[in-house]
Image (cartoon, rainbow, N blue to C red; front, top):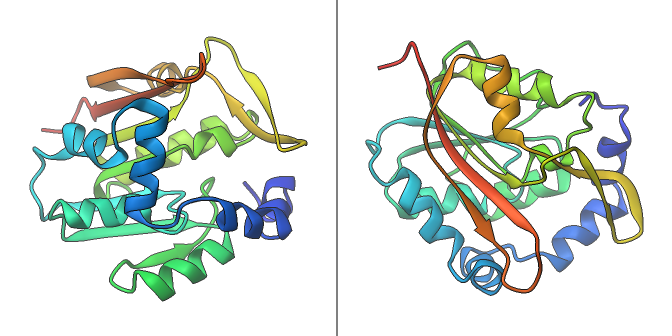
Length: 215
């Protein structure tokens, strides 16, 4: 997403600041929200998918927000966690409140890292914020920067569907993001599942992928 996009302007304006005023910014608050939504916590889901990894692997979250997911990994014992986002208010918060987590301001369409720099690259509800015209480029960058594993947790729909959110359009979309990864890249599915919302018909889908050339 280039810096002139609608998303960049919205997330770096009042919309983005108000989002973090409403949204939980602690692990405990976010786990409580997830438990209300899914019947289990974000920490539990991440533990289930990632707990078997060595704790010294290099990890990158694309779209790290205020760093909640990276703090969860730190609590699980992961030593080398990194984040990238273009939302400046979120990055200011993470630099203030989570000083042990290094973060970079950059676009997800052009990650400032070398090929295969990280053992694990992951997103958590990032791709839903990427315009459909840019999503394959973002996915390609995620795959490029991973030496082996990719984990995703994203909204799900069978077809591309725009989501109107708080009266704003052109901000959120859901689709089968797992298929988008598999269609363009040589990846194997290690594990995947749907996460059902308790109070609606909405679905999230989470998946762990491995690059086939990796060992």
